[in-house]
Amino acid sequence: MNSNKKGLNTICTHVGELEDKQHRGAISPLYMSTSYAYEDVDVKRYPRYFNTPNQEGLCKKVAALEHAESALIFGSGMAAVSTALLAFLNAGDHVVLQQTLYGGTYNLINEEFTKFGIEYSFTDGWQADAFEAQIKENTKVIYIETPSNPLLTITDLEAIAKIAKKHGLVTMIDNTFASPVNQNPIDFGIDIVIHSATKYMGGHSDICAGAVASTTEYMDRIFQLAKNFGGSLSDYTVWLLERSIKTMGIRVRAQNENALAMAHFLDGLIQIEKVYYPGLPSHPEHELAKKQMKGFGGMLSFELNSDLDASLFQKALSLIKPSMSLAGVESTVISPTKTSHALMSAEVRAEQGIADGLIRFSVGIEEVEDLKQDILQALESIKQ
Image (tube, rainbow, N blue to C red; front, side):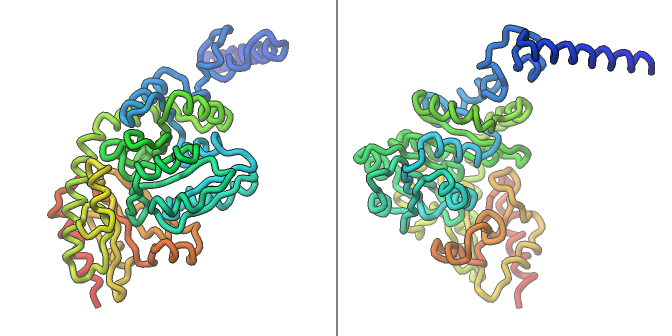
């Protein structure tokens, strides 16, 4: 006991000495913020500046996956989205955004951008001409999401890139639903690629992270804001994310295969009103998806017939679990109106076609027959 007290007193005395030296300007504040006992601290090595060795190594892997020159990782997908957008938008600027967007991004725009004096316009759809129609003299950025959350709409990457270059604009995409395995937007002329790395890059529903990839010039600009916003990732989570990326290829390809099978299965059930999946020939942008995607992804959405209760259906599932997460190895479902898009008004959701009975299905790597049987037993249990 005495030994422990002595050790604690010694530590406290040492910290007090350091604080005194810091107060007198004899030691860098960074010395006090890290476990590295060096008085000549390189400010660029401060962990909040995204530059510890394992962060740098992971960033290089993300850049390589997205065919980019450089990349940064963040503490969440929204940290990545907000930092990327605000790095290119100032007071008086204007941004054009796709109508069908992740609810968190939509809420960021509506809740925060007016405070910064940033103007914004949402498109009437996701076709290229809908974006050009919203461009103004002060427009600086076009922001898209494809496949979109939760309706899996597909936006023409090449067409958007051409419009942006014509008007001298920067293009950004949320590529989360596709993952780098299925889609590389930079190859089609998009400037900046954003991911919620919590999803397919993570793949195990056990981390929260984000990523941005682009040219070295653009990433330097994003870094200058990122280091002030402080949305960096802990070294331990960096390790977990790097672990997960090693298996992303085989995971995503298995999810692609399962999702396609499940989309066809659901599309053939009389209890299902509609299925949203770009891999189905009936999807309006099926041919476009084939052109710009290597696989159709592990995400789909579907609507039950109006006489069936979506909440009861999800509760009746056994193998497939209702969950806020997506893109993990386990299959999950949610109601977007109650989760990912709950912050949108009912009117806006209706405009986007997000029905109250819509169910978003993140298909995992289980046996397809097991997933089919779980769907069937749940439908049987709630039929009236």
